[in-house]
Image 1 (cartoon, rainbow, N blue to C red):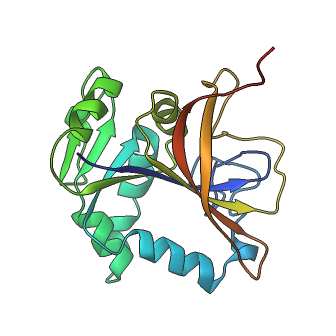
Image 2 (spheres, rainbow, N blue to C red; image 1 turned 90 degrees about the vertical axis):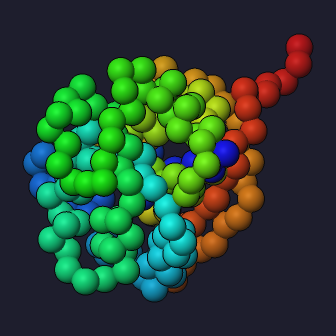
Length: 198
């Protein structure tokens, strides 16, 4: 069985849109909000998460953004790993997927992920892909959530957990603060939200 890890750069108010640049996800006013907080610790944590063979789970929008960047990113370990990984994509247009190796998750995306998770193969990493990420946590399919939490409030943008997301419990299993104020928190999925008994 494959492990699924969700990785996100996230603001204090839960926004994950366009962390790397203004135009990577439309013309987002605050795009590139991670730049002032870059540090060796964040770079090292990202590299460590990708230091063994892995495949990718991606929503179609994130796939399109990455397909336009990573194949042209030059010779570096991160680009090499992402380009070599099989990309499993949530899409209604599988015939237009060109960044290979790539395959569609099918018409029932959640069942497609369930089927994929039950197979042998490299563990799966999901970056961005807010709709898919939230759905996988809601369905209990994500084993681990690695959040790079930046000391910013954006006030608008796509959030990891939109209104109406499933109530779930996660357990904090690791945390580290960087010199630039970024918290690197690792959570494991627990299950349905536990509340006070009345």
